[in-house]
Amino acid sequence: MSEYDKIKVRDAMSSPVIVINRDSTAQEMAGIMGKSKIGSLVVIDKEGKPVGIVTDSDLKEKVVAAGLKASDVKAADIMSSPILTVGLDDALEVASDLMGKRNVKHLAVLKRGKLIGVLSSKDVAIITGNLLSIIAEKKGIYEGKVVRESAGLVGNCDRCDTWSTLLKQVDGNFLCEECRSELESKRSE
Image (cartoon, one colour):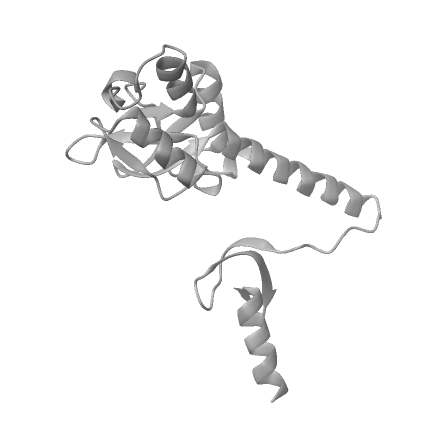
């Protein structure tokens, strides 16, 4: 198993997922995508199972370019179906290969059959860029070069469970900036 195999879909996916039903109009979908700043919506059936996906490209190509009225076009009319899925703990490499082989930019992420996330080609590109930065930094360390201090890790604070892009390790816990400040204040009292 290579180091790359250890990177899982869960490490790169976007969650929570914004879903729509088959009857959502293209006008509604465009509004949701614009407001949420996302490029796809997962279409679910009455039981909440993913049955398709509508992307911003689908709206452009199948509605706008076709000259259709956005309020008349339903998700069921333009969605890609069936939706391709991957498991939460699948290797990111496998998911990335699936995207390339099937020429898709989005995969639904399932855990025990339940939709919990979406993996986009943008998500894969971001984590790949981060990995390249880590590799370059590690190479610099081995070559004896001075490297920058880490800006912080990304994840949930071990103390307050708030999402942070600036987690730093303090006494064995990864803490956000606010919790670190509170801890420092208590220590100085």
